[in-house]
Length: 253
Length: 253
DNA sequence: GGTATTGGCTGACGCTACGTCAGCCGCAAG
DNA sequence: CTTGCGGCTGACGTAGCGTCAGCCAATACC
Image 1 (cartoon, helix red, strand yellow):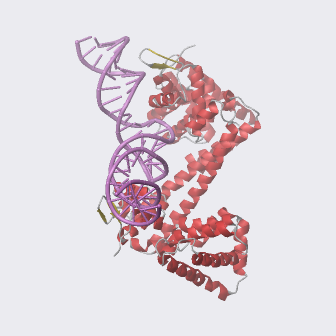
Image 2 (cartoon, rainbow over the protein chains, first blue to last red; image 1 turned 180 degrees about the horizontal axis):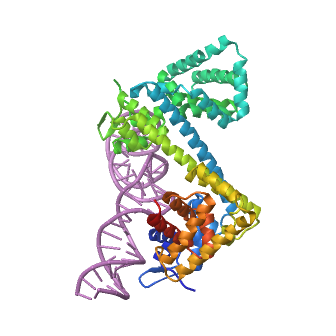
Image 3 (cartoon, chains in turn cyan, brown, orange, yellow; image 1 turned 180 degrees about the vertical axis):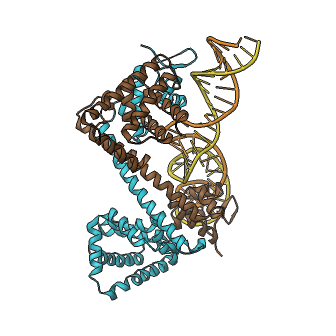
């Protein structure tokens, strides 16, 4: 049975010699024999293993996972399923990101020569649709549908008052924060309680602890939300989030 | 005008103190003043800049690009458009990858407890649809449609002979390669010429140099194609690809 | 006055999967 | 004897920080 040198294997499989040495170094693919100055010799079993490595790698698996699979530590189907899940998550993330970037571009092109200082105001158009998508994927269709139904059920007058109610809550929160109150302060928690009950009305259902904390996370993670709060007071989004977390821990399950 | 320490800025904006030091280190965001043991003090302009940094970063831009934009070296809309293009490319890559992984999982679940050695044979089902998608994105719908039309126009007998014709070409190529012929060897190029004319019949149109070389690339880059060739002779896909490249360079434009 | 706590600082390593030198050795052809 | 081809072993660089380790200063408590 003949053997092949690194350069030969490289030519046959398309990987570089450096890659082969790397795989050797991390123990993923060791040559059948090394001799005379450390020269590597690969046999057919090694070529086969290399093929398998390249196949799994092409599927996007990390080399550590590849090693685990090939050395029998991991069932290949299970590993691929987990990987597929990760891919789906990553793809959704990219979708959202892509939509956000496109929306931002439209904004910047709509207004002319916006100063950087005003970028934060620029995320209004498309916002609704985007957050609806975000919300559906976060909490499921049922919650969002219920929320839309609840809002439709309001009188127009009630509906127009929604932003003002939020603004009032935010303003009162900012005041307390100015006064040095922590997120678990009783007054702060009272306001968060109001907030919670208002969200409940908007959603048409009682948010679970998880959903409520998820909303808090959205407030800080999403640029448009975060900047809406920051217009009231710098860092308010994070403050509210912490208060919501505390409220959820203490009162929800 | 008051200033804020790293920890204060961290609490307000949600980044870590380490991140702020990092931004300082790479010159992306320098504190308004440092004094007394190197302690950093940030003012309002720095907070504003940080907000802008975080916004652009959340859109997926690299810190180097963010710096260029904020320092006026790059028009923000142009940068975002380029970024959007990259996102689209990346998303398509993920789509293809995701489809490939899903197909592989179905294969592995269809057959039971396949030994790793047989994985290479396992990518047949779904293969057609998958490569069709790949082909459409590589060469456009027109080419693929023409190809399907050309194949439909064949008699059933002709159609069943397609695999055998390919197999014969591959076998003859492998023989020449065994004999030490390079990719630009006349005999090899003659076989590739046959291959080219056969592809032309299949596609219903003359492949351009780019398309033909793209097909060669597909042969080596796609695991199922690559292993089809490797069943004939190890490394044959790459050999054929090089020969196709040489053929395209010499005879096509 | 000693000490535990809190914050802040500066290195420096780690992570992914190699690419890319730099520097050295051995073998064969001219 | 030189040149060239292969092969080898380090070691640094990559993006964006996380995570110690080790040290300093101010504050609070006993």
